[in-house]
Length: 126
Ligand code: FES
Image (cartoon, rainbow, N blue to C red; front, top):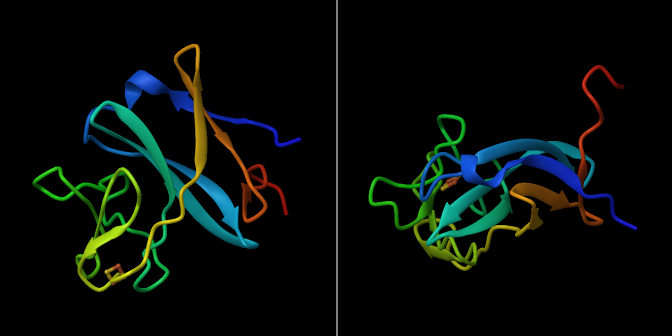
């Protein structure tokens, strides 16, 4: 059974505000994920652009463009729908951010790892 990973308190993730970043392993590589709030709901994605597989946020946690309508990659400006991760414009054409499964319980947010995205080893581990 998948072990839920505590990420933080849900009310710390504000509407279209900074995303909550966390480390993970994606297909065996070090990567990160993030959680954002959009129209009141929380959405989580692997922090990896579909244009070039690099992180989306130029400044850690800054995922929304200035209009607060899309998640934007800071490198070449690809934009994604916050609700689905679907590319909405720019060089990610046709791509989709990889959604991560999360759940809220008693005001806390938990991530449910899958076969591809797994918890990062504890700091100081090999
Ligand atoms: S790397 Fe994200 S738009 Fe190019």
